[in-house]
Amino acid sequence: MLMQPMDVLTQFPVRKSGKQKKAFRSALQDYAGRLGYACREEKTSLGGRNLVLGNPETAQYLVTAHYDTCAVLPVPNLITPCNLLLYILWQIVLTAVIFLAALVPGILVGVILRDGSAGFWLGSLIFWVVLLMVYVGPANRTNANDNTSGVVTVLEMAWALPREQRDKVCFVLFDLEEAGLIGSAGYRKRHKEEIRHQLVLNLDCVGDGDELMLFPSRRTRKDREKRARLEAVCGPYGEKNLSLRKKGFAFYPSDQMGFPYGVGICALRRGKLGWYLSRIHTWRDTILEVTNVNILRDALIQVICGGAVNNGKEEENV
Image (cartoon, rainbow, N blue to C red):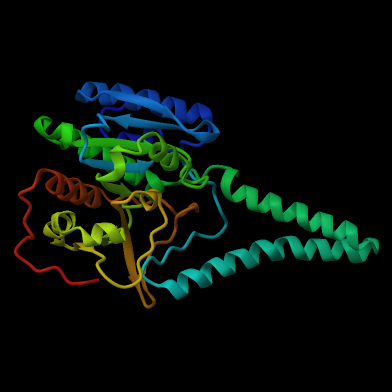
């Protein structure tokens, strides 16, 4: 039983198998009921099941996160949402590693057996097995940031949102994000009309980093009212900072991408090559800072309810 959102980290740390997901969904539905929310499951492709808290038809806002657990990898999935060159280079490196893992054994077998076709088929088999393991391999049992942090923040917002504001918001936990954004695609297909004007606040990897960054879609940037609501809550929060990416390259690969007014939200660190997100998809993903959760909970509720302030300071462009 979930007594508070942070219990997800200790009671349901892994949500990858059908049994693990079912147990989590059951506990979440019980928790949502105690908060006074109507909660239901919606089926998606490949057996996925999204959890929907609230009424999508009346909601002006969607607050979302994916709840499925990724496969464990030997190297982190480095994401540099503000640095296009580094992002492309890292994807090339990962692709090259997978290719070499298949090519080298294939060549060796072909030479030893003096049979090029045998080497080719072995290499092809290894390539597809390695690629498949990226998506459906053993679960990463340490996934505090990706994406237990997003799930916890969604539940914190559901708990803290005033009852008189609940008709304005629908909370959705997507399944199968790690398999290719399948859960969010299924939700969009089912709710085509509702999502046309809703502001979607998608929380993905918000637990590890001092820069809490909002990545709005191009349409969101151009919408003055929606952009103003986001800008109003940005600024310093103690040692942390909440900022809106308003110009320059911005690419955050998560569930918000398919929504017209999607906003990706994550926590980043600063390095010599710019803002980055690392450690995810590996055993080092162990950090979930409660401070980040609290800041985002309060700031995003202000976005929804209005009356937000900018802490008396101007936001710096990222």
